[in-house]
Each structure stands twice: as structure tokens, then as C-alpha cells.
Image (cartoon, rainbow, N blue to C red; front, top):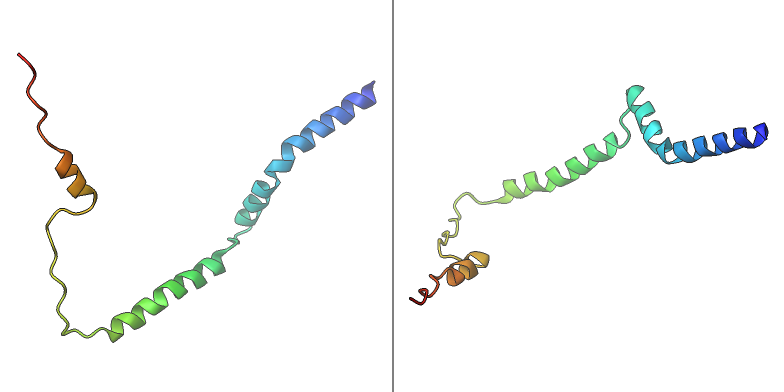
Length: 91
């Protein structure tokens, strides 16, 4: 009887800790001073920022910017079209 209760307690403990193992592993690596994925984030940010700088260097400063239109468009156009005054209430 005692052996069954010990086995049940160990099984419950393992069942409880099994989903927490990845979190505990990440916490351990952070406590040791290593951030997993740091190099990948740096490479990704360099890849994203790299072409933008090259593209900015190729832009000609003499090109005019297109004029900005202040006319309503898209969802604002629909909202303004539907924003009507309702009919008056019958007296």
C-alpha cells in the first residue's frame, strides 16, 4: 500500500514538472548569463537593416515626393458615407 502511494506521488510530481522543463531550462540558461537566440536576433536585425541603408544611398535627392492626397479613402470613405443624419422621428 505504501509503495503504491509513493509511486502515485512520484507520477503526479513528474506530470506536474514535465510541462515546466522547458521553462526551467530557459531560466537556468538566463541565470548562467547566456541568452539563447541572441545571435539569431542580431543576424536578423542586420539582414533587415542592411538593404535599407544601401537603398537609401541609391536614392536620388532631386526626385520630388508625390503629393499627399487628403481626400477620404478606404474605410474612412465608407464611414463618412454612412455617417448621415437619421430621419426625423414621427411627431
